[in-house]
Length: 107
Image: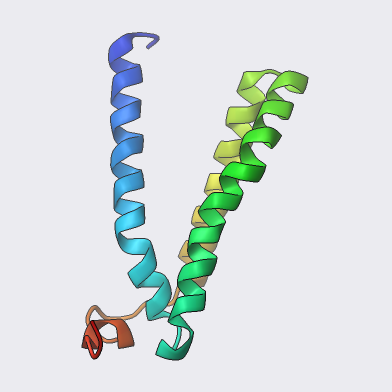
């Protein structure tokens, strides 16, 4: 399990998951709020990705130096699983095509 093929496969899976995430995150987030605050919602969503880089990389590097690189990966995986659980529990279920974003009133 320590081959180049496994590493390449993991990289492809991560790339696809990132592409899918960024393709749907803005429309999903803006669909949860009224149109008057869509600009603010988009700013907060995009700021989250930037803050994750600015704060997460140094934190992961520090943790890796203190406890080894495996601890950084375990911590990141734990945060990811907690985020997944929060999304599943807190994101409301809505039928497709029934939100202010799907009406297309403005370009």
